[in-house]
Image (spheres, rainbow over the protein chains, first blue to last red):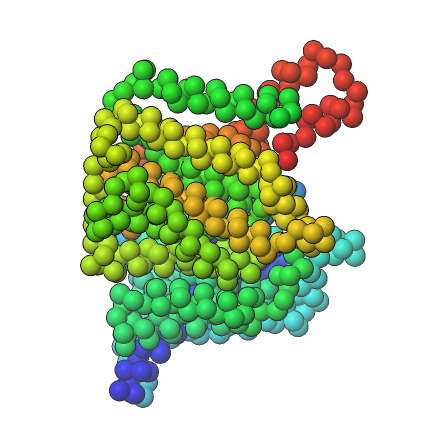
Length: 293
Length: 332
């Protein structure tokens, strides 16, 4: 009984970490640009697909391969920012901007389709997939690494945002980009940074979750929606609330699937988020920042 | 009606209607007619979406839920209660409106991205229910629509095409009417500034709810029409893909114009038919095309046509600069 609960908790935390990391990425970009980046899930996909190609052909060792994944994702994020975000941002219509990132997502997916094809591919693990026993539950190093990377990413994001001068400028840009620019802060650079940082976080989670989910070109949009849900459930304005929202969704999914029927997991979660939004219109931990926009 | 509206909104709409009416005399293959009718289904969906998003700026991603409710209602009313199609359609629209009133009363309190997410959840719940309420909806296989029968008259394929055009014209007229009434101006005011709209005496929450109900009825009508066209309803009616098509048709066609949704619907329906031969290149081209429209044609294809009309009609006269600026402004 207890064992089942723990197993479900762990699998929920693993999936939840990925949703949480996508949610964190989405919320981070939202915090500095007020745009929902629909391409965020595609960076998870890129991470999984690139690491699969690199490790399968033994091109690079695991450490270099991860660095290569982060590099490629950073470049893709820069391209996304330069081609889809900056040309549209002056129009100030949030719908157009959101659609721009959606177009970016379709383009990334389209390029990936040309490279990897539509079929699901096997993604080798960076860490060992050997079962490890902790107390009563059995897990793998790969699974633990996902939860660990979640914690590390959160700590890094927190350290950057709240412990450094640079983080202060990032938060200031989120509050008002034009006034921040008047203060001599280069808001454009900050926005570019959030795009790159978010892409790297998402790609890293893709590297780690790839062996569990399998890599598929079309997996991006589903992950974006889950990450968006996580961000909304927690509260869009706050990256850490968004990450917590992801964990909640992951654990809930596992619990409903484990104790009820996996058939009803999705509607139950959707209904739950709906109820949360009706009671707390700005997310569980969100502030009323949305009012001002 | 002002001459400006006549020229810039009514004229292009009439041209589009003429093209639609004449199209079957050029190609009347079953496939072409079906594609043509799907254009109108999407156009009706687009009218509702245009009111909601283009006019009032309420980003609802749940229209596909009402699309599915309308489709399922019209089929179930016919098969389970034996109502004729002409009675089932209005009742299906009433069901859509009532559902929207129930859901909207709470959902429309949310704003911006939260509203978008909550309405998207609504659409996904409708899809989930369509998949899982097996006894009623027959799961993922969906339901067959009985042969359309309008009070004893069973239209042929080509007659069905004209019936669909008639439904679209009614939807177009309602859409154009709403845009030009006080309510239309209230919606526009809400988009620009909710607080300012409220302070000029517009009951923002009441108008939001009315708008949500109206848009749901449009989507329900599209659902009924789609059931007539495809003779089938299934859970893909409430798929996320429908929302994405709706967003694309809104932006590509041009939000806020009377006939933009029709042009957008044409593009969204016909372009995939052309590029489907390109196989793996298809998504890439689709994405690039969408991005190019967003960057270079911010007012959509309807905006291009509008600028063309303005250019052609103002070139010969010399105008004071102020009038020129006014003429070049979008049809807000």
